[in-house]
Image (tube, rainbow, N blue to C red):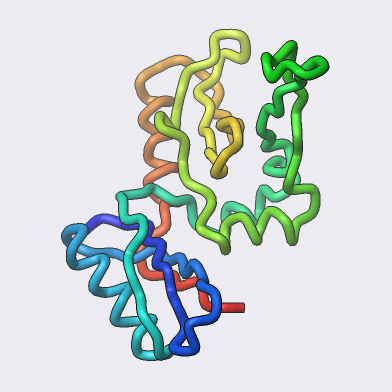
Length: 175
């Protein structure tokens, strides 16, 4: 079983506008995950539904965001600075979207967070293995460090990531 991120485009029966419904579900394959998500939303709403996105994700548990929210407010994305009429970047500035605990938790609720591509990496300057979270559109952000440089320390960090990875179903409903 893997965890899938699914985004569904929902058009109400009235035909006015559309909404993007997001969820994370456990399933054997993409087809089963899409059907599981469609079944959930179709049971509650009339209208038409179509799957827009569907891929495998490794998501930290929401508990991690509750416990480490102050560290996660440091997650940023680079915004290019341009000069005059040119769109050529002359530099970048850091933009922080999550400033409060509520902001950090809403990032998880919106299904906009997962472990970094490589959740654990070694930092020689700190002499530690670092666990990273990657919020959508942001740079990967250091969350926790495990001091040491041995295979045992790396295995401990990877085990911590494994134990704190979300499993189950989460459906973001229309607000």
